[in-house]
Structures are given as structure tokens and as C-alpha cells.
Length: 241
Image (cartoon, rainbow, N blue to C red; front, side, top):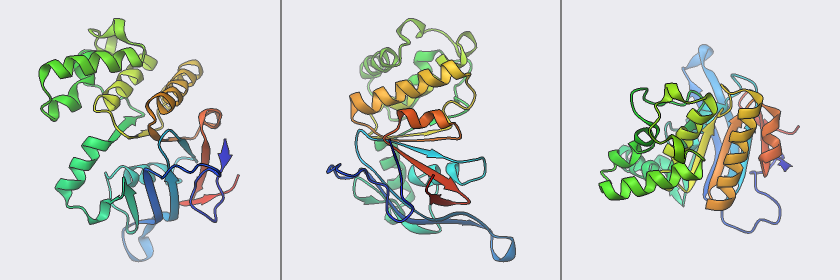
């Protein structure tokens, strides 16, 4: 695990693989004038395939704002984000959505499951939105549920699952379209210690086995044990430990 330097983009020494995600000099300002909030202040980072980068910081430090911009859910006030060489800020809204759907998977703290759908149905949502063939939907959902250890729970609804199992469904949903980049915002925030460690281990396993670029935000120091690199963010800036 490497703790990043504040003076350069975060890239592991000796890792010659090109970055899938490149962010340069990101700023994000909300409002104007004296009441403006500067959520990000010049953040730069790289994430290569198969690497898990952790973003640590207290509530309000800028973690979620950063992840939203890296995943194309929001645009920076200044700076650039490139995914597979595509500048997100230069794309139309439509093309940015298309790139996001085909390349980026999201895992959220609150799980975001639809309560009346089964685990399999929840995991299939992005595939159904993309109008994937029904036979392929079944095959992909079976594969991702197996990957997250929920083969025997495919027909269970969220209320019938533990918190850790619900988060595994959320991860399966994020994996369903085979994303090259997975962004997880406080994925252990609603879990106890044991379940949280299991989810972090699962994310590490996915990064390794699927060669997925991964960025995980957390206020929990334990995330460092599973990361290749740790970014420490405070007041919208990346700093040393």
C-alpha cells in the first residue's frame, strides 16, 4: 500500500500500465462569492486497471464530490477527467451517459436496492435498462451473483438478506455490465466490522480477478489494508499522512 504524495498525480511507482482513469487539477465550487463552497481544490490522480485506490477522509472532506466527478455523475468547475482517453467534459450529456453505462459501475453506502425485487432482479437492472437479451441477462446475473457469493440467495428480497448480503447484491448489480472502472462510495458505512471487512476483501478480489480499476472512499482506516494506494483528502485537497 502506498500513501500518495500531494505533489504529483497518484500512480504507483514501477506500474507501467496506462491509467484507465486520469484526473487532473480538479476543482468543484458550489455557489458564488463569499458564500461559495470549494469542495475540491486541485485534485489529480490516476487509476490503472487492477488497482484499488482508497480515498480516506472525514465527512465533508470532499470524498463524495470527487467520486461523483470521477464517475461522470457531475462535472468539475475546472480540470479534466479522462476515462479510456475520453475527456468527460468534452462529451455531450448523451455520450457521457453512454460511456458511464458501458464503462463505470457504482456501489453506494445505502445499497440502493428496490425492496420488492429479488436479488437477481436487482442485479439485472442495468442490463434491462440497456435492453440486453433475456437469455444473456440470466447468464450474466447468475455469474455475478456467484462471484459475490450469493448463488443460493437469488430469489431473496432485500428484507430477507443481511446488510452485508444486501451490499453484495449492490456489487453484483455494479458488475453486471462488466465495468472497467468500479467506484464505491463508503461501501462499508452501514455494516458492522466483520461484514465491512468481507466487503473490502471482495472488492480487492474483484480488482485482481477482473483487472478492474477501482476507487473506494471510506472514513475507515481498515480500507488501507486492501488498497494499492491511499489518498488522504482534507478540505478538498490531497495530502500526505
